[in-house]
Amino acid sequence: MSQTPEARKRTSENSWLGDEFELATERLGHGGVCVGRHDGRVVFVRHALPGERLRVRVSEDRGKGFVRAEIVEIVEASDHRIVAACPAGAPDGGAGCCDLSHTTGSHARELKSGVLGELLSRMGGVQWEGEMLSLDPAAGAEPETGWRVRERLVVDSAGIAGMHAYQSHSVIRRLDCAQPLPGLLDGVDLLEGLEPGADLVITAGDDGVRHIASIAGLTTAGDVRRVRRSRTPSGGRRKVQRDRAQRSTARDESILEGGPTVRRVVAGRSWELPITGFWQAHRRAADGYSTAVRTMLRDAGLPRSVVVWDLYGGAGVLAGAVIDENDDARGTARVHIVEADAAAVSAAEVTFAGDHRVQVHRGNVATTLATLPAPDVVILDPPRAGAGREVVEQVVAAAPAFVVAVGCDPATFARDLGDYVRGGYEVVTLVGFDAFPLTHHMEAIALLRPSSAPATGP
Ligand SMILES: C[S@@+](CC[C@H](N)C(=O)[O-])C[C@H]1O[C@@H](n2cnc3c(N)ncnc32)[C@H](O)[C@@H]1O
View 1: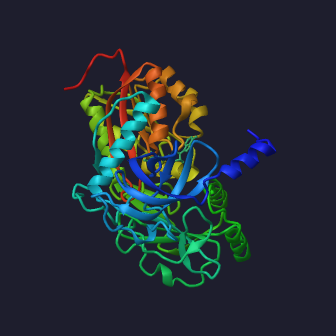
View 2: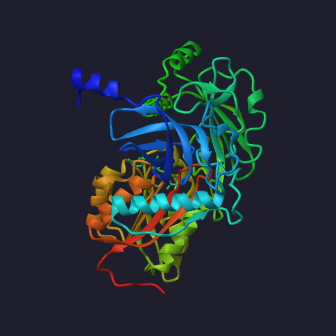
View 3: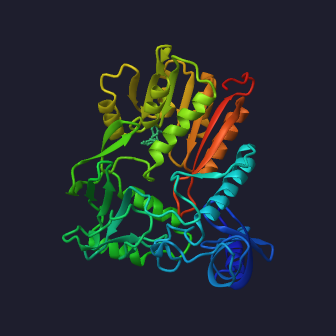
């Protein structure tokens, strides 16, 4: 909606931008921000914890019911506050990605459970009071570090690898992030001859081999400097993300270390994927989600010889889990993987070559479903945007006995669950995974069935 000049003037005159005040934080909200209230408006603060008293400075005021603010001083810290486990995630001048490393692992999981429960209730009408599970059985009170199998860095105008500063195109020369597997980034700061503006993808395969690919930038070093000067101090997050996404499409890749494909192994089945191809970030995620999906379906009494749709299936990790669960003398599952990415489809075709139980379909989920045989089970693992109403309606219309919804964004996951519930499904089981420790991100998996379905299983 465009504003009149008078409204614009009023907004800028009343703006809180730069104002400082004391704030009591109430709870962790979606996106990793702590929520407080000041003078009738909601205030979002990063790197805070619930129950703190903070002196904050407003960094963004768009004239709406809320403002964003940064911490100036911690007046009274939460008992759960610790020294941040990730130095690179520091709020001032850091990369900002580890936005929940300043509390214990157990408290972070407790907070994330609250966020997931609140979103499920508000956006999906689903009540859930479960606990966020760790993917690492050894995880306890300590923050979980060293879990990420793939890191993406950027090369600055002098050819040195670093990280993007928070909400910015500018590059900070530091690699001391606490997320990567131990040793994953060793020596990367010493690499010479890197192309200014390129992205570096560094990943470790399940065979222990490290691979590094350089993805050519669309910008020259001069462009990088221009972009850096044009940085907006606030409110530029969407634009920065969009710019980065545009810059990462259709760009030349060269291998600097290792080979062109990475070996991944789950439950004894292996995949060879391009270095830049999708794979779950946490070293235990693919295995953990496969086990969760198998267990949910087994506990629900999955009948034999089912037809399964594995939508947004990637290279078929979850497809593998279902055929392993549903293959014995009493029957065999037939799984249809639907995936848009050509490289993931090729990897799936190689892994399942000669396996009559699996068919791989390259295409957009929304336009491919009509070509598939009627399903007994539908698994959906969409990107952060979620499956969306158009796809959910098609799934509901296909009337599967079970839907397994997987989501890495709790808001879109909750929204999609709400659409299944309105379509006549109910949630049987729901688990949240702390799949991105040190950050506010999480993963959730739900098993649904038609609400009129008789209870099955043990
Ligand atoms: C979160 S990943 C899940 C991959 C897989 N289930 C796994 O665990 O490895 C989402 C996948 O959806 C694919 N994708 C995104 N949008 C799509 C669409 N509209 N149609 C088909 N596939 C899509 C992406 O290429 C990506 O492989």
